[in-house]
Length: 310
Image (cartoon, rainbow, N blue to C red; front, top):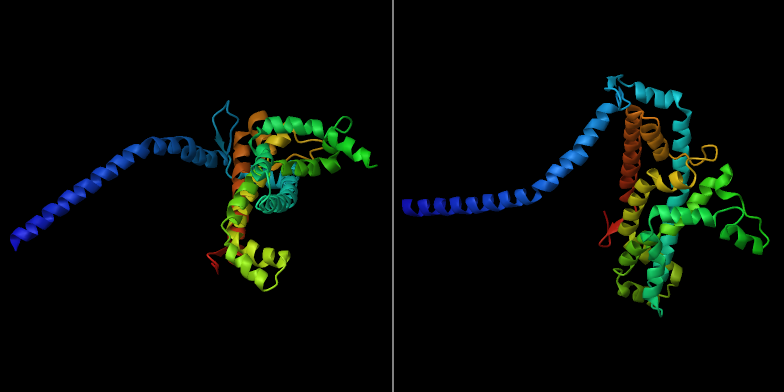
């Protein structure tokens, strides 16, 4: 009896030793990533939070001012509200439009037609074009005098707007440009569409369903997790819209394209108000977090997993 107990303990000790050895090996493999994550992610986040309560311009040590940056943002900075409005305007119009266009393209490219791989490649290619190159291209396309878009409109008797130099058309121009990059979302939708069982469509056809009831009652519910994913990613990306506005308009004309991230960038790297920019970054984080949580809260009503509402 004692011998059996001793043998069991000995085996348990050996097993624990092997488990610890494997665990230690795993930790050693991920240690470089953990160190990099701590240095380049966790430390900047903590530092940014501290700087948001200070007056800091890089050249001098930070001085603690408490909630001064946040109070100034909310009460004394008209560009803060202007940039927030521009960002919300862009998100409200570009996100639904981009989701609809990418979904329609994915449904069209999910059919069995000749040369399907070529069409998929063509629609996806703009996604891999660098943002700077695509911005310069669209500056040419949207040129009010020499641009192809206004030239095409003139052929059908429509005088094209001034686009990027007109405050009323600058944001719509950037929203139009955003459709250029829907190929990434299109591919994700396409993957979701290919997972929809064909048997559901066949059963619906036997019951006399036409194309729209099949889309509404089968396609959309079955790919609702994919729609949910693209919605979250698109929402976050819309609130962080920066590169195209920075290159194409610089926030103009008349601050009509001064998006929140661009205003934050100007304060941080043009005016060197690092503490002020840090406060802006944390406000943006709170806004994105609140919007994301709201979408998550509503997802239980319309997102389906495995045919059941979660």
